[in-house]
Image (tube, rainbow, N blue to C red; front, side):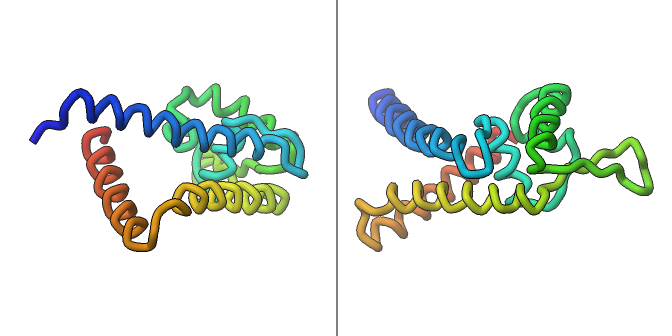
Length: 149
């Protein structure tokens, strides 16, 4: 069954409100004790913290930007001593980016802020509603992943 335009509009508004809540959380993250961090820098730190070191190309794909854009963001993160680049020993053309100890500290602060934002969103729901919400969110996320490649 195809959802109605009215429901699609309501969903759009709700998603916009949730995104706004996360953007507000991003603003708070940008002024952490480890210095000012831009939104793209927050997203790179979070991406690297959630995964192992990765190539610049992977960061660019994640942020949906060109590699040269990621290069300038990583340059700034390197100046702030939050990440470091290392060339692959077997193929010197491959540059891996990873968090430094200071970057892992920043990641922990970002992760805690993200979890606080998620806790706040779940708070109005009782436990059964939270479980239902999580099932629905996973279903939506899987469908989105399937249609967006």
